[in-house]
Image 1 (cartoon, rainbow, N blue to C red):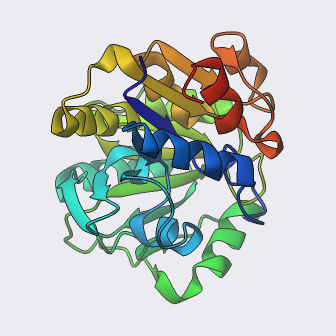
Image 2 (cartoon, rainbow, N blue to C red):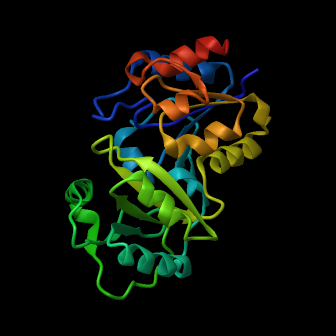
Length: 271
């Protein structure tokens, strides 16, 4: 019996062009709520960014945002949990990224982690440039000295997956997450968080609050930054347009455009 249904946002129930949600997915969430099932959105977006694309009154109960760095009570509009990377670890990561000539951003503490400092490498990165342009009013150029802040995360824009593997092998006491850019749908992002941050841990926190058995959790994702939650729970699904490596490992539902939550809800007898 499913007690909690969690879904990724971009590329799962919200298409990459942000044109809106499938009506069938919204109906699936509404029906889940009527049956007393806890509904969670688990996203890499910041709290502000998530609120920008999730309408008020949307049928969810909790938001796990910034890949699990924060948990938000959607109905009561209250932040319940925060986990920051911190200043000391951020100061260890910055030289590594500079030595590898990477473009990166340093995100301020929650709830202001939509604001950030940015460092531009000699070699340009189109996705980084688009990110800065899109978030221009929250972007602050980084000088040589890193300001002392309790940073939420570091985000690096990489040329390829091999660079991710190489950088990840050089850091410890830090959680690294590989993600596909929600901007162009192909660029490789590398996120650095506090070591116990993940979408899975955020969902587990909700399970504790709501007294939900983890065996009765279902999750739906679409990309590598969903791996933690896909691996953590036995009822795990990926959309049909997810990368092949994920589709080989997890149950596959319909493409994002074809209402995956409705399909999963039918398969799990939620509807």
